[in-house]
Length: 464
Image 1 (cartoon, rainbow, N blue to C red):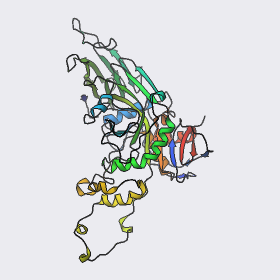
Image 2: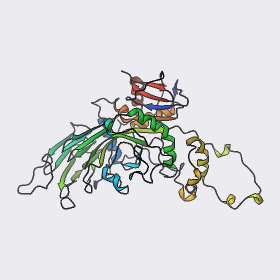
Image 3: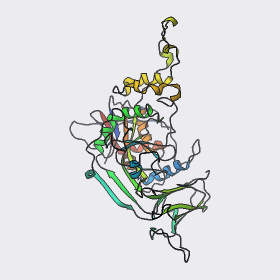
Image 4: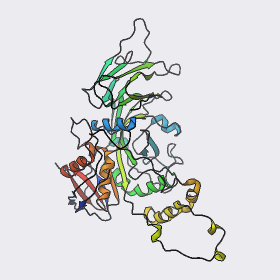
């Protein structure tokens, strides 16, 4: 992988929103039959927000955060700065990359951390030793309900945050120089990108890319709601990932490529941004070519390709369900009654210090899932495993689904909030250059969607 780097949210006051013992699902695509449904109209007063349009925050944004924020308005899902699967994953997974049914989390480097696939058996090569103890395969998800466009992006295509501000030209081949085998004519000697804007982002696809999506949203919603608490228990218990609430992703679609280049810039001088993407000879004889940024002025960039399996294993855009659960307040130790026991009655183990994680596990045991045998995970409560359920969690990435899910959980007593990428995307106008701030996004949800209660869940549908 080639990389060039340069230095460069909460809601308050809701009323009339009370959904007891239910699951909230934010979806423009969900349709259900059977029992009658009940419409609910939430009301919001003041909302604290991060303004994406201001371009300013309390901390410096990393290049992958800038990249994601600026490309999200293109409504193709979540843009991954690191499309390539982690090299420590099973070979079978690295060969194919992100697939429908993958459960994972967005990491702090702009990539997708794969955990397991919900649609495959527990003993499948990509799942072996990775699934929760109470894993239940989601069956009935097959190719008949999948749409795929093998040539969704043509060779040499690029996806900019603003088409009129990022300009692409083809680099002319030097006279007499032999062209590298396997290079498409649209790429030739390379592609050059310039911009007169002070901030921007784009992904370039020298060999094009494909698009795949699944349409059985209803089944995926219900499955995610049933498994949400179990998954968080597993991820922050045995796996000790430190995943923040709302980080779990269930993949329903993705855009994938064999070769790619990503770039972002912020606070750049007008007309100083220049990036050249050029092909180079493959590492392995007879292999496919690689691509890299030979010039990168006033920007951060990264390029890579699958030169091991020669497959479209890199996920450039990710689409799916973002899942969050309602967590009750952790009881303060000052509110817990003390028990006095004479030293003569204590055993050897009673005199040893107890980890705070052990108390957390005991408190959450009845809430999260009664199916777990927490004794199996007793080693996670030792001092050397303080990265368990209630230690420091990963930094929370910006994601519009997180904004919607946080608002739902902050203003209701629903148990689970689920939002699909298609739902927030339907609220973005085609000519918008940046994501609306948090307050505006929630306002659009309230004005353009209905919150529907169905059995034990709630979901959002577009009010047409």
